[in-house]
Length: 245
Image 1 (tube, rainbow, N blue to C red):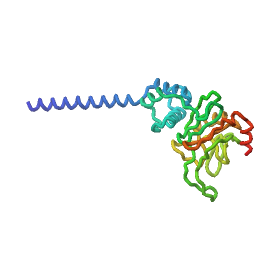
Image 2 (tube, helix red, strand yellow; image 1 turned 180 degrees about the vertical axis):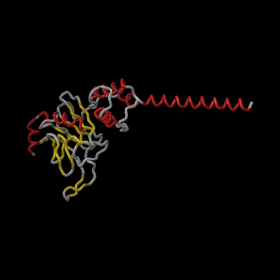
Image 3 (cartoon, rainbow, N blue to C red; image 1 turned 180 degrees about the horizontal axis):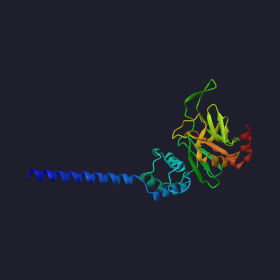
Image 4 (cartoon, rainbow, N blue to C red; image 1 turned 120 degrees about the horizontal axis):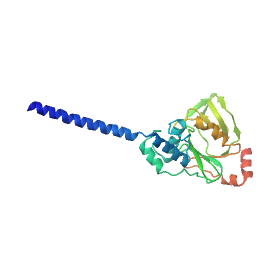
């Protein structure tokens, strides 16, 4: 009788363990996405205005960058992980909206750490960026603060390919203020870490530069500092005088 009881107990424990394992495996499968779901994420992100690269169901730097930009813009946890929860959030999301309206310009939202390329219809292409960290640093014996200036600017100088300096390397730099540029970098963190420049992912740097010819209006702002440049767009003479200054 005792032996039968032991056998029954063993069977019950086996069934409980098997059920728990099966549930865990189902949960694991539920947290991962199929290739069809990954393609849906890429397609939806592209439709919303993010920059996922080819819609092929493959997770590459562009795809992950687009997800991070989405998470940054909406204030979601910045994980870069493709989950069912992120898919559901993307399905119910709307396109980012430029703060200064529908004319050709670039916006850098320092709070969200994203860059928006805006066309004349108000449609956007959105990338994650990393801007000035706010920390102090020393350059050629002088101490400075890693600060990204706020305000309205004009792309006044451009470089092709790599440019090397004492503070690091810049890829396809687009200068907007002094030595501050929008440029490609291999080190685009999810938080501000630059010396003041606006870093964009390497895969998009050439295209960003192509879409930002000389004279492009660039707005850089945070929650308390914003200046519209619509008057520059409506009156090119104002933009010209600003670029001369």
